[in-house]
Amino acid sequence: LDVEREPITLRERYGAAGLDFLRARRLVEAGVSVVSVAARFHVRIPEANDPGGWDTHAYNFKLLRPKLTIYDQAVAALLSDLDVRGLLEDVAVVIWGEFGRQPRIGDVTPDGRGHWGAAGFAFVAGGGLRGGITVGETDRRGERPRFRPYRSQHVLATLYRVLGVNPALTTLTDHTGRPQYLLDDPTPIAELLG
Picture 1 (cartoon, rainbow, N blue to C red):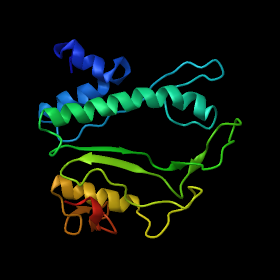
Picture 2: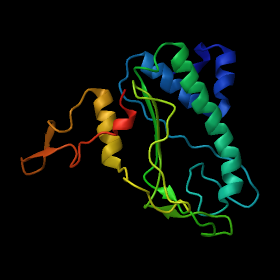
Picture 3: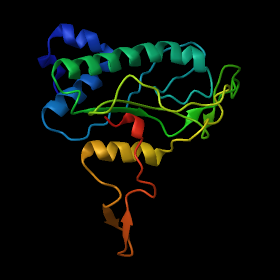
């Protein structure tokens, strides 16, 4: 976990606030199968006491301008670093929240945005998945999916495929001793499969 063992030029590419992404890459190289990074960046703006998270019911734009710059730098460095080391095809990078943000502005403050369960996003890269594409879309207001909606089960089915797990065949035993499939809908997102 000691990022000081990495060259200073590489650490600078990740940025001081993005060093957990560098630690994630080091864990992958050490053989860890699944790594989760809690990307919490505390930024200072006079109006808000920012705990570092992404729940921007208030001061959405003022908080996200600096946070997204930090996040973009760290994610770009991670993807480039994995690619240079020949790991990107074997490592799936997933950026995903449990819901989207309200398409209308003005939750707690005039520029706040609340939770929005009807539409969200997932960013996936590497892992042998097809890259450089956008799958799915929302209506012009960003409120609802257009055409076929993709749900969390579709994203999970795609990731299980990357991990070599067949969710249509794999079961876990519930608390009553009955087998339960991993997903009710084990259909992966076909557009992402190579």
